[in-house]
Amino acid sequence: MNQTPGVCGGDVCLRNTRFPVWVLENFRPLGINKSRLLDNYATLTATDLANAWACAAAFPDDIEIAIDENDED
Picture 1 (tube, rainbow, N blue to C red):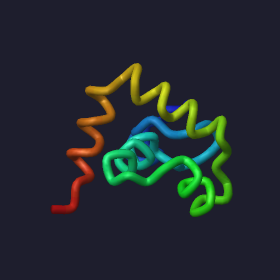
Picture 2 (cartoon, rainbow, N blue to C red; picture 1 turned 45 degrees about the vertical axis):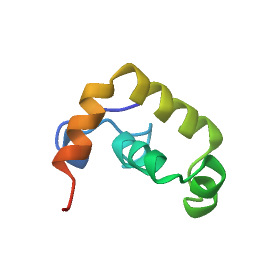
Picture 3 (tube, rainbow, N blue to C red; picture 1 turned 90 degrees about the vertical axis):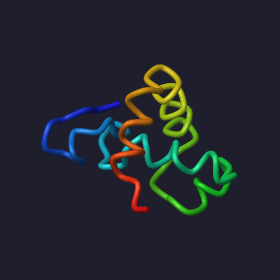
Picture 4 (spheres, one colour; picture 1 turned 180 degrees about the horizontal axis):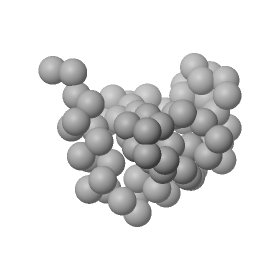
């Protein structure tokens, strides 16, 4: 996981990508499973998803804040 000021708004991203963890975590309540994510995002690996879920579990408040800040209601 990377968190770099100025990259993706400083959100935690998967290593060597600009793919924020909160984006992946936001798909989970929608019922989008691992297989579908891997099919739709060819650059992601099963390891990437496992790392994203671990990060989201370790920092749930930070991930929830990022989701709320990026909510487009």
